[in-house]
Length: 211
Image (cartoon, one colour):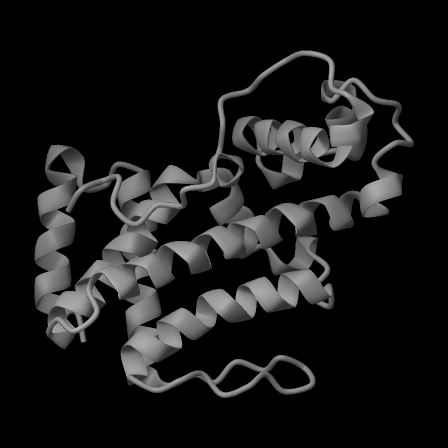
């Protein structure tokens, strides 16, 4: 599977190498997100601080509050972008394999998920740190719902039911199996557990274990 297949097209959705420089205040939000992602790549969420993000964006320590309120708000914004990127990636895999046999479609969907996790590690890891995020943020809820809906629909062949008042996500054994397989393979591959034959091992695993 092509490592570039089914990846988000928007440059701002991708983890970028750390950059330095002075930002214009008109792009303060983007500058703070970029600086924060640099920190997340280097130190992880436990090493993140709002003050350090402001310092790297060359703004005052109080500036992030205007856009995000607090550290949780800033991290939630990054996780939201992560879910949006994942949803776009999965939808593209669906569209590119439309009309093909189910086995082909589900494998492409799995590959899309795995490649996204490997190529966008800072956002991807943060997406699952629910205790660090504001899970009542409307944008976050919509983005996470959209990503989950893609998985639900490819596995079940049915449209995702409209969200309830608390955005409860319907879970079935098949969805749990799909999610666990893609997520587990992605994290193991990222940590190098499959050695030099990573792509072949993933491909074989998906052939044998996909629903």
